Image: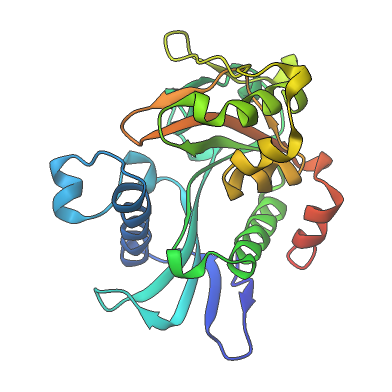
Length: 262
């Protein structure tokens, strides 16, 4: 994937990470958002390094929006936003996707086309605007076109570990966006949290959407479906759902946002 976006003043670059230094910068942003801002529990190594890192970082691609006019505290160009992208072929034999720690993906993995896991998506607090999100979506569009991806999927998170705080949103997702059984991810037994938490007749779509973080609202706007069951992730202080997008059924508005890249 080549550089996909650069403003006239060359402020922003949109591309995949080049080398370990840029991956470490993305990991520092992830630490800032997930651990310092959202309250994830860091082990001693992460506390010392102030980086969110795991074994998947070595095999995936890291999509970056880079602000060339600002630097982080280590003197590197500031990462405004990032996505971690893992294709099936990047996994070692018998290695699972990150999402499989919470959800059974047997149905998704049986799909004959190309599949792509999205994870560790975050945006720096100074750049939480439509422009940066659009750049990330255009980057995804270019990546999906280059690798002929048919399905994107991954965990999407609600803040906090109380599913009742997002009762309307979870119920709405289950009632209106549940994936077909033939492709449906399912939360693992022992982790499964019922998503139907509000009476369907009393569901209010606007209230449900207000309970959703912007990223989940964006996925729904793109035509996403969800798996059955949520999972409480105490280590990340979140309630997770499994989201999947069939690229052939991408909504018209999001297809337009992709169009410059594909």
